Length: 178
Image 1 (cartoon, rainbow, N blue to C red):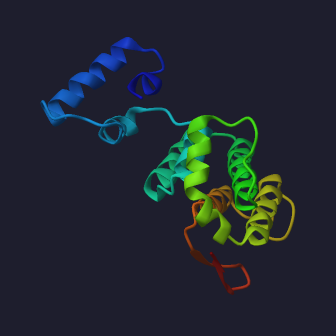
Image 2 (image 1 turned 120 degrees about the vertical axis):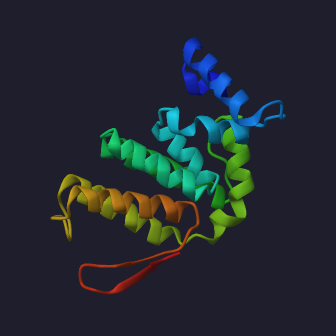
């Protein structure tokens, strides 16, 4: 895990090992401890977002999206990552396993199958279509600010993770996404 985060940078890896030694001493560390210690120094990608969604790790999910936003990541890539999680999740919810996925992703999807079966998929795909339209500047409420588009992406990512979200629409109606 540490080598993946450091992307082959041995000096950075050595510094992280020293930091871990200072933080934890001689305590046995698992991947979770290491991930928490190096999370803020690591660069995030859309694949980290996908993993956080499927792991239902809301804190990491929102943190990854905030870092991607701060790095000015392209919204079409964010939408693609979320839509891939949705496509794979929908297939699993329907009793099929998507082709061409890693063993780790397959295990994650299998573990989340009961949760994925409970999602309201038409609602999720409607949210995805709306996000895509707003990111392109079209559709109802297309005048939304860039921050609102990122908020929609967070809302959709949380929905994919099975987290219920209640928001107010521009027409002042409360909408529950569950």
